[in-house]
Length: 532
Image (cartoon, rainbow, N blue to C red; front, top):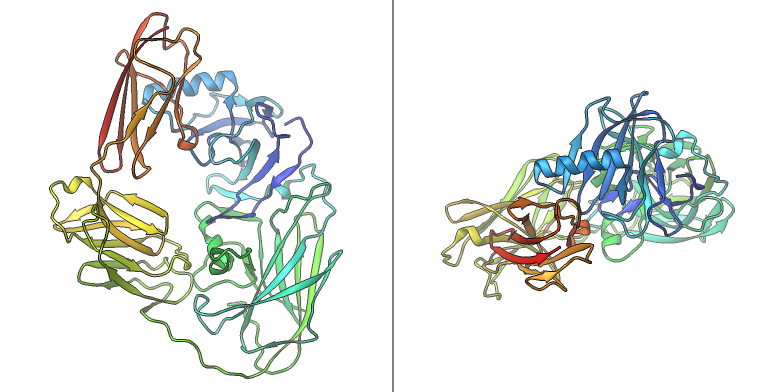
């Protein structure tokens, strides 16, 4: 970028339901800084979307790797013109476009874009990734010799302890404070007494770079038993197909209750992805001997800076009685389901990270828009690795099935999907446990054009902004035409649809037609006349 690299986030950093898959490079709280090609190659893909990357460039390089630059405000002129032409041909703002080799060739250091804050960005920065091709696996850019000064070791916060003889989701872990500094850490106990012969450990901590207090993710964590490596993780390569696996790498229930991230130093049974290494299958610690074990946990960053936590631990037999849990038990790797009179749920073989009892209850719907009972299946504090299939039966007569949505509810949070029908049964898929029901949606979206009235004079305006709201917050289609021709409106972060005046709107009188449609198919239109 022509400025020193300072990181707001590194590769593998922990985020909600995903790992951070690249580096976030600070831009001093500014936008529109020049972005340059990291190496020779050609632009082979462009992606534009309301969330996610916002506007992104993919460059394929001569060594077979791909670099990605995201949250951009603008592309360089030749590329911007090509993209705009394709958007008008496809009549879509959100696009994913593959370019042929040789169309837009770049050299290392060529200007390719301007930085911004578009898409799923919380502030101005450049998101940068390195990927393999064609596998599309993300590699840690910190391993490529970037000019980042880092002489700071990772920091331990606290330790978590689990019983691997039991379901991860049916136990209460212990949390132990850690004290120390300068890479050496201890717990406040002479010996940690364990009530399980098969313990598992997790750590809460962070890493930084020299000159920065920003807490970033940890590159590597390994646990040793009496000097021998047992298991651990390394954030060297992760694909987007694997990124949801973060929910098996962390203590998800603790974090869901508002606690910190605890990164597990052992692999859960249903987690099959790439970050874990095991000295022996399962990566188990065996404490059956009752002897004192010297446990050392080593944290390391991508530059080799290292911190160690060392403590003694021993198993002592205790009360082995466990709480009982209601519901049917499900296991990773099994295709199974639960069927009730008015609802059914089916879990695929890749849905669960560990075994767990899943309870079901049915409640009467109190909302007049609900056309089924409310069916609760499982607990939202238990993460899913894949979608479950949900089937619900109508219990109230409806005149328009095509206006019925399946809704997932968790307190004030909700999501809706258009189901498929088989008789009186509706089917859809969700990636979370919780409460599900069928609801009727007969309310059309609302279109507003702030500051613009019909027959307005917009000669001095630079843009038109369209606000669209919906009772279920889900707009499926937006379509705008100017004098009968499709017009390009952006929709960054899905907040507002914006048209920036350009040569598609000549001087004179015009008619702008807006059509919007929600998830249930309810539509609204608006017509505005104006003069340029």
